[in-house]
Length: 380
Image (cartoon, rainbow, N blue to C red; front, side, top):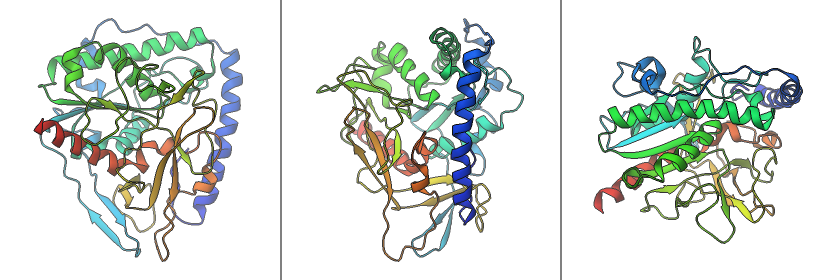
């Protein structure tokens, strides 16, 4: 799907995008069931990640996706446009290790191996993590992620191809840790498939290591189910990591799946075992999101790469009867508000819902959450 412009065509664009997604999904399931998958081998050495070419963002590089023009136009309730410059942190005390979502929409199960065109990967990083450079040093490796068709393939195929993807993430993190860590506080953040990889990294590398666990400021596996046994705070996906419940808490989890208020989760994307529930943690300190940020993508009258609205959306965690808890998103709907509808939430129901925008609605809140947790960590 592509970003829609804010005009009458937006509704048409979004309806068409949703329709195309369901057609694509049906085709993917059929092709995945009958196709011969391509095979890669898990990485056994971290050496390739010493090469800058294997990174989308890394602070020691002369330039990268996370340090371009990140200026933003805020549309106010009066309809005014306020241009805000972005000021990246210089050698922040926090490192954000980011894993991007599925961008390879190939209908053949396997791993992404063609890195000749990085435009989709860079677009995902620019939308989701680049502006977090305001509070952290961003490390974002390339990886041989599983294609979208892999999710509809056999269990054995899924195991094989996700092993390859994770081997890249583990190798990249090993190089980050050996060469760049500097004892900074650490944020692990991933979205969708990237969240799946982040969860495994947390489970296999961070949780068993007391030194890394002590450095963990917050973990954000977003858009991928973190399951927790009912009536418990730990267990399920993680042994010891629990949901963040207060601003001063560190070494905790922020996880959620965005759904338009009044919609319900898709069972394909948010399954939980019996007597477990999906973790939902609202990163905002109130029910109103402080700042939602979207790539402009040709929006009329906006010349900056990003457009933002403050206090325009509400978010609250909803208890689903089947345990598939989610973050319900709605517009505030204040009288006289002249801001355009950046997304038609009513047309975002069904399918993957607002999954694509998980890190857009809450972006300003995620930035402030990291900043606040660092303040508390420094006074301990």
